[in-house]
Length: 174
Length: 229
Image 1 (spheres, rainbow over the protein chains, first blue to last red):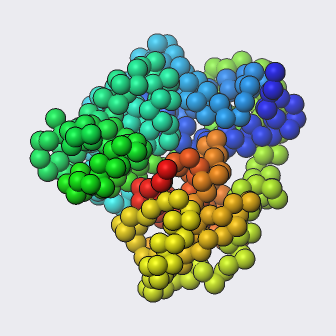
Image 2: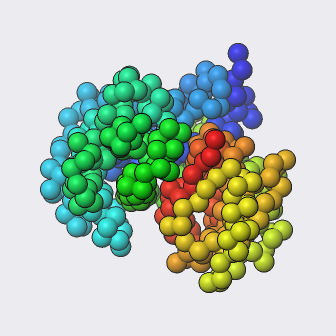
């Protein structure tokens, strides 16, 4: 079996890959959990798990979806193990909320608020597509859905955002 | 394809709605405008999704794990292994491996330094069109002023090398149809910051002097490029 991350060279390559992917993995975890501390825990645990299992990864191209799967499972596991205190979105989007991050651009904050308020079913495929660059087929595989269901959720996610952000000029999208 | 079907496809995947949808947009001005709106929205979504990340790498984060209950001895053995691996990886990354895509991009940039200057003078439209056609792409005007366009040999292929003028200064854009990285990557070298983003069948590389603006610029470029074929 080809194992691109086995041995010393593979170790260095895997470390480099994790370093490059870590910011977006953290962001993905944040948008799953909507909480910075939970996202950091999830990413730490996930990278540890990935590090232990890296020898089993058959090809480098599969690393990103594999890491995303680990993040999703770790996030679910963390929620099973421990009920996190939830914060209502209205409180979360207060201007000084650290979850929203420091940004000087009020337009970015508006969009961030709108994304935070989306249902998980709509937010997750949107994050996988726009942030992580997955195709609809890859998202379907990741979420265990049909491609048609993914297309529908992505359409609805954007439609909701356009309505909230006031850019839906008409009702033709429905 | 009718307008309703187009809007369902474009609303689900504005960057890659498919050849039939793109053909429909070419023939339908309202749907073309709708697609542009959606792509602009995607640029805003991308910028919003990029929440700030702690500056520290994952070594300090991992190092905090035992305090939260991992088995300490197991962790120490693992951490030593990770630290070693990450140090090697970081050195390779920061130093820039000679055969890496980032290194090749930096070398290419330094071969044509005159291109990366701040100017309000746009490239000749016919030259720009020719470079884009040779590269198999179209570029929507929202991207801003393209001050330089050249078809360059890069890693055995002829690729569009553009310079886009942004609020943060000139930015080099290389459209790399034949380079498909496994993941987005960032790098810093020689005072420049760069991003390589998987896009279409390949990737787009963006290099500029101001790292703070690069995410936004990269997202805008990503949204402005249409891959032909």
